Image (tube, rainbow, N blue to C red; front, side, top):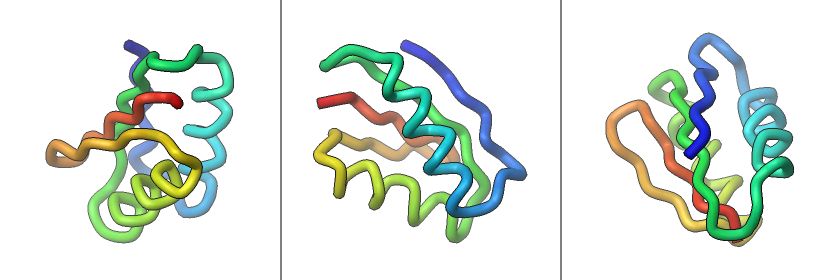
Length: 67
């Protein structure tokens, strides 16, 4: 599992960086992203789900399983 700390990164750049990291993963592999509360914690999971990935949220960490 890969981890990415995007605290302090504003929207939509946090999704851009997460998406680039996902491109390096194979199907079924996970990426855990740490983000700031508020808009980043709301928009990043939504964007990942819209792309068809599985998403779980635990506090300020979003885990995205690539599909």
